[in-house]
Structure formats: C-alpha cells, structure tokens
Length: 384
Image (cartoon, rainbow, N blue to C red; front, side):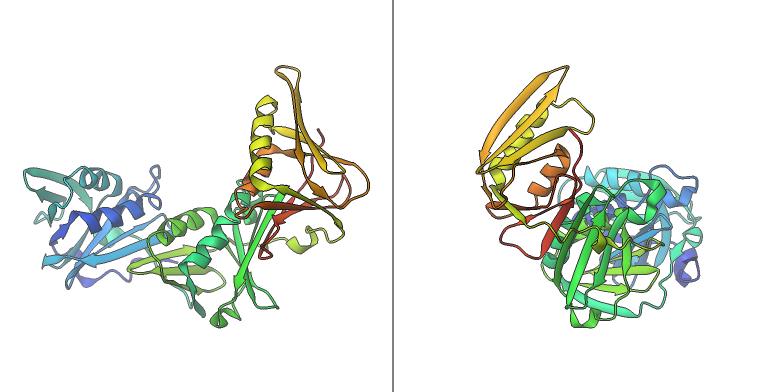
C-alpha cells in the first residue's frame, strides 16, 4: 500500500545536516537500482532525505519497491526534503574521498544546497509531503537467514528467471518451505529450471509460498555483498521486507500461482553421465562460436566413454570436439541444447564433476554438481 501517512511532522521544516561522503554515497548508490530513470511521476525520480535525532535517512521507491538506509549525521535542523536521486549521486561520487558534506534546504524548501570545501551546488526540490510511502502489512512470518545462505539460493537460481511479460509469475524466484525441512528457491522460464535449498530456519516453518520479483532479487543481492552476518526476512502473502544492517528493502510480491514445478523434474532418468565441468564448459563455449543461430544450438552425442560436441552452420562451417566421460548407459544417445543455457549451468558447478541424469532423447535432462545434492538444474533438449 502506498501512503503518505507515515511522513514525520518535520516534513514541512527546513533541513540542515552534515555528513561524511562515504555513508552518503553508499546509501545513494543503493537507491540507484530502485529509482526509475524514466517515469511519469516526477517525485519517483527523487530520494527522500529525513534528518532526525543524530541520523540521516534516505528513502527511494518506484511504488513496487521501497529502499531506505539510515546512517549517522550531525543534524543541525530536523527536517525532510526530496531531491533528484541521480543528480545527487553523480555529484557526491565525484567529490574527494573523505569529504565532509553540508546539506541545507532554503527557507522556502524549494532548493537543497550542497556545500563541500569549494564545491557548492543547489538542487531543485519537491515537497517531502508528496513522497509516496510504502507501508508494511501484517508481516506474520519473520525469520533470520545467514547472508551467505540467501546469496547462495539467489545465485544458484536467478539465471533461470523469465523475462516474458505474459507469464509474469515466472519473472522472479519462488521461495517456500518443504515438508522435509528445507527453504527452497526455484526459478524457471519454461525451457529450464533451477532449484536450490538450504536448511529451513525454525521460524520459517509456516512461511507462505512467495514469488519475489526479478528487480527485488537483484537489489537484495547487492545488499548481501556488504554484510557477513544474518539478514532478517519478514513475509506476508503480498509483501516481503529484508532488513540488512541499517538498510530496509520492502517489496510487493508477484501475484499469481507458481507452476507445480516438481512435475517438470524427470524421475526416470537412470543413465548417469559424468564429465569434467571446466573442460566441458570450455569446449561448449568454443564450439558455440560456429553456431550462428540465435539460440546457439550445439549437438552432443554420447557413446561409451566419449562425448562428441558439434555445431554446424551453412554460413560459418562446422566444428567438432571430443571429451572423455563416464557413462552408465548401454545405448548411444544424441541430444541438442542451447549453448547459453548449458554454460549458465556450468557456472554453478563449484566442484570438478558435472553430472547429467539422462532418460531418452526427448526427455528433459537433470544437471547437477556430482558432490552437491542441494541444487539441481533441468534443461529441455532442442532439435539440432
């Protein structure tokens, strides 16, 4: 819900604050991904500055996501204003390192003066009272998760998020708890699927299944890089809030039902193929150079202890390379894949061996790290 009711009483009062460049720049940098550069509502291109007590709080929103960060400041006058997020960021980042920055609104609140050493800028402001706030709902489920675990769930799955607007419910990552005690993340674009899981925090045992949008996923991932400890996650059926140190990210959840993805994961793939992940990735990358098709198809033939990888184009020619493998199947098998999809999977393999679980040539194939049972990837074959 968007509201202005939470705006502090000081919204009509002048602001005067002195801050260090470092924390100000950090907060403004976080806001850049939230603020839309092109929008029809001018104030959404602004950040809200609120000076209260001994802190400065900066907030940005696009009406779907709200980000705020609070940091220490010398506050001479408590007040609020809004200023262009991109202009202020561009100026602050070009000031000398360690600079002390004075921010002060004019008496009528129409401008914000930035003074630092010999630098002096005046920014046009919009009234703080017009800034839209995203109020939080009843976030009935709250739990803590280690930053590294949340980063892992995101990194192992986000490459499979869809960008197709017609199936908007695929434009994010689905998170839910499993009956056997895991917090699982799943993403799919209909042609591939990525799944990863970590141990379910006890407080998350009753969490609803939620779909977190692509934009929110990328913004929270940026914040995770800056912390080494726990992140607090609060959920309702329509909203999620991440609290990361002094930063708070609130987002609407994607409405709609995520597909029953477990039906897509084949369970009859009994033939096991193992290959050196690094060598396989390098070979596919080289071979795909010869594939001029938009989908960059490569063909693979598996027979005994050899995998033959090839690509053909009437424009460029053809290429063939062989790799030594371990294969439990008795019959040769041919299949084709989008090279980009294969390479996306190989980037997730941290150990030496990439394992494929194969059925027949028409079935989806499961790819996984041979020594990691907490993640898997499903790839649909293509005709080559």
